[in-house]
Length: 191
Ligand SMILES: CC(C)(COP(=O)(O)OP(=O)(O)OC[C@H]1O[C@@H](n2cnc3c(N)ncnc32)[C@H](O)[C@@H]1OP(=O)(O)O)[C@@H](O)C(=O)NCCC(=O)NCCS
Image (tube, rainbow, N blue to C red; front, side, top):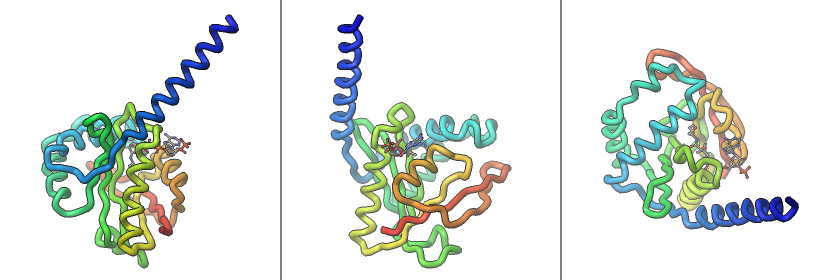
């Protein structure tokens, strides 16, 4: 029994090491047009999983993949857009913009992280941190100082992630999704 327990513990540690090694192999690169359907799959699954207790079910069950692909194809030309890749598979993405055009109402900000998603079954393994830090580093290189992002107020796990990344909540506003109103909070990062 004792030996069995030790082996189980060893196996857990071996699995942890393998998982750490695997995450080290995550590559961050710019999105390509052909990645967009996969990016949209991650986004739709991300919404269904992360927002199931937050956003209206009818809205979540009726998201159109085609519409989201069209929107992302537009984003692709207009803002920063990176993906995380593991074994040639897209496992996360992030969009960002190096100005304040998406949030003019907050003074003094100079860049914004617009969206960040990790494939549902690979959450909590450091991929979000890699995407986040990549964007932050790029903004720092560009001489930016005040980065913000908006997050649904009820999205507690993401708020923990954004806090862990060093952000503080500085503002709040309503947001309409479908025909219902929700509340979102703004995180500020001094970079
Ligand atoms: C939010 C998200 C991008 C974070 O990416 P991730 O790869 O899961 O996060 P990481 O593994 O890099 O986590 C880094 C830290 O954030 C915190 N964290 C991340 N997910 C968390 C969770 N579900 N609950 C509590 N803390 C969490 C932890 O402190 C973690 O550090 P630790 O493991 O050393 O304790 C990802 O979970 C996601 O895609 N969520 C669903 C979609 C979403 O809500 N996107 C944001 C829209 S505003």
